[in-house]
Image (cartoon, rainbow, N blue to C red; front, side, top):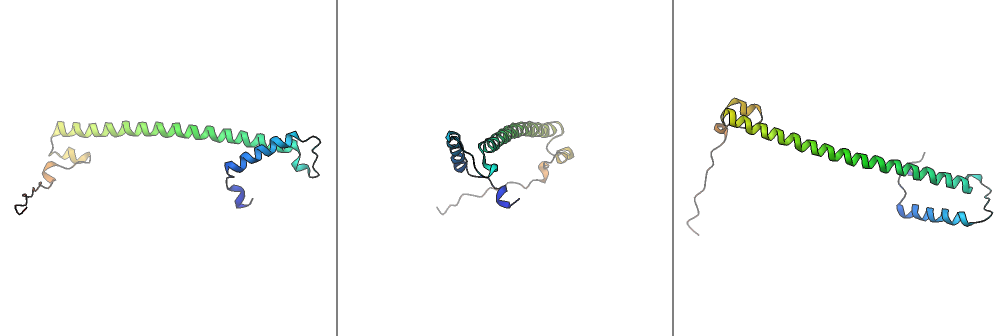
Length: 122
């Protein structure tokens, strides 16, 4: 299979192809010498294409739903961790070793805030 067979065909071209199929249906006595291009074969290929497109669309919708569910559970998990950290600080205090265990810094390990004096030359 060539690499170009793995690239998507533009929607514009596919719509033109569908229009050509509709036109092909109107031709009475269409009987091509190459039997790969009979109306029956073209119709069968069109039906396979539409069925595959429908399956792909369903999978995309399922993926979107799964992504939304994952995001919802991420937020739920994150909120529970943030709340747990607050509980550890409330129970054990800001300077306890338990605070470090949940990924926070002890109050005594923080650098003091140095406030600068306002510039008097202005």
